Length: 536
Image 1: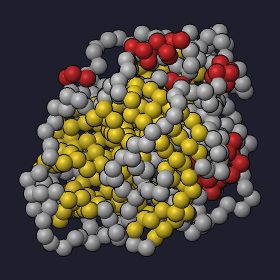
Image 2 (image 1 turned 90 degrees about the horizontal axis):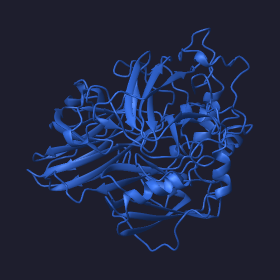
Image 3 (image 1 turned 180 degrees about the vertical axis):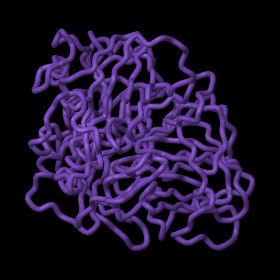
């Protein structure tokens, strides 16, 4: 990956967020009722409880970074360039690298024509820095800038992206690597690999146009490819797709009278690993570190080197099955937290998931291939340790034929395993909606920032994800990590298969208002999001 550029920034804090907005967010007023008996009974993102939690994290050396969100022409390799939005002029954006305990001070300059934000995917940070417009901060207006400042308390592989409409499905993402000052792993080199599915700027397509197409639903002669209906919330969706819950920018763009680009709705993509329907969007390209398979990135090492590969799925609608040709991988971490080491030929990453693996590399040129699960296309990068010809763009290592490792097979390393405790509260989140109506929701209710799932500080909370649809959903919790059942891995993003129930536990130790949502960009923006709110 490219080296991080660190340039000085001025100022800190969140003056741009405005305490008035944050106070309003905490009052539970709006078009949806709060589940709390006391409408004003939630911790505000800039409240004293949040400040106290941040103080307990301490302060360390300040790492100053400047990030610019801007229109850019991006080179995907092989002579393919696209007009998109990005952080600077690179894809992915330049890596941000800090050490656990550091204070990250990052200024976002917004040179886009629309508002934006930055969300720090996977970090347990102070709530008013989480980057969710309308919930934890004001949107960063076009032409404005915003200062993010917080303690980065836990090492691991993370990434950053907007939480504004469908912007993440453009080029607005970058890896965030938090180094461990007491790193226990021994390795010679490190390779950060960001996987993505790409549509923006190809033949006039944009993610907003894709969402507009999907939002129309589909006439399948009575066949419902989503299932689950409107779920247990009793809400009627018979009147068509309601886009009122979408961000203002995305709703306006998606409502444009003539969306550009060819049709992108995907039909017939299936995967046994994902329980059936693999995805909604037919992407023209799949990328590894911003490059197409015809012109892949090459990472150099020496035979016998131990290489740590940090894998990040930044895709919008695609799970990737990843394998390194002629090698087995030792999985060491997922979503930033260590696991008991396990070897595998291949592993599966849903959108938002991260895995760290160790490989002792052989002599030659080897393909790191990421199969777009169920979509029959691949992303590709190359590992070169010696001479020889590079494999072609369509190479399929035999390791991809093995059943991929999935998170349910992992066990948390002893030092980070969640201690056994009976849950004080169980929150049932029924995942509802259908491809036919494109009415994705939680408990039959599309997202409203004023509707909260209440918890109290100090509680052990169980989230019960009940997938009442016939599509898979990678569910992401902001500001916390949860434990998979039976001493399983600590994660912030987990795949919930169709028709299945997944129960995960976490400790309510980070006050504020936190999103829970599907990390399929189009499902989330259609309404499959809700808010976890700490009671004041």
